[in-house]
Amino acid sequence: MSLRAKVQLARMFLHLAGRLPAGHLAYLARRMRREKPHVWAGQLRINSFFPPFPSLAFDRFLAAAATRRRAPFSSYVAVTGDCPYRCPHCSYARRRPGQLPRERLLALVAEIKALGAATLGFTGGEPLLRDDLEDFIAAAGLEMATILFTTGRGLDAARAARLAAARLTNVTVGLESADPPEHDRIRGGANGPDAVQDRAPGAAAAAGSSFEEARAAVAACRSCGLYTAISTVATPAKLAAGDLDRLYALAEEWGAQELRLLPPVATGGWAGLASVMLSPEDRAAIWRFHAARNRLRGGPAVAALPYLESAGMFGCGAGYHHIFIDATGEVCPCDLAPLSFGSILEEPLAAVWDRMGVHFPRPRCECLMKSLAGRIPAGALPLPRAESEALCPPPAPGAPMPEVYRLLFKQR
Image (cartoon, rainbow, N blue to C red; front, side, top):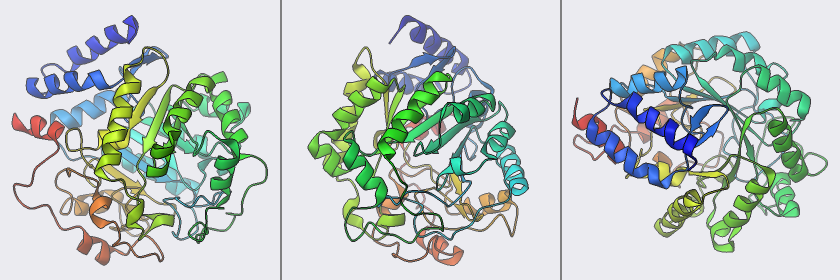
């Protein structure tokens, strides 16, 4: 950790002192040894899952934590269901085609802000297919950190400049292999019989190299001063083949600030395939990778969701501090949980969020989809409200909480 990062980290903990319990802060400080705090554009970044410090977004995050309030710290919106690729693992596969009009999306951003969100993510489909994307980013203002999830398609220097002008906080470019032909194969959907999924119109395979598009996108973001992460689905096959090491080296070579590791989930294109989920041994290997790379003096930070969402950390915040609204207005507890609890076309987002609180009154110790793997049918998604509610009973009284939350709620 650089001296600048150490100074900013000390300032952050001083900012938290007195607002959060001492035991909670001490635990976070110990766990910070497994992270790689770094300074970007004058702000401290832990990783892209958290707002930068100092910022208004960080203060919103802190305010909800200090009051122990259920709030969607992290809210993701699919601005379109269209995508030029056909990745077999796509979590958006099998959802209805369509997209919300500009004015409804602008209103949705305001509704999300009113609920207390600190981070607003724009996903899809491929969100860069919308020419008005920058309007939604700008509407978030400084109160919410914004993050764009993209394949890199169409992200040239001119588009990166527009995103930077709209004050985008983070860009995450997906990369499924450090080997260009393999990445292109996965993006094109040539992954066997399970690869071709029902997708929205416009989902035909893109021409050219998706790997080179990703490389160019990262370069464009760097040229405009945008914080950039490379994201990959950390499958058991990638772990066994050493692909995470190669992706880390590539992220460093390309000048990305972060490598973001996502767990494979039996949803979307993989709905019903419980076999894709990580084993306990796989998760332990990812945790070790996360800690080992973050101990390195140089190179990008690693943010491994299987570690951050473990019982020893934040657990699963689906429906508690995370929410997802798809491109047709269906409200789900997570972008990886294809369960609808209502539609913003039929009622206000706040009404759906409040109703979800019955099913998600507290964070869980493990991923919601881990318990539902194999129970999501390989048909149209998301599941309707009645089925979704039946699959998500409230946790039993006295059920354990993730350690970060246990310590937070221990002292009120």
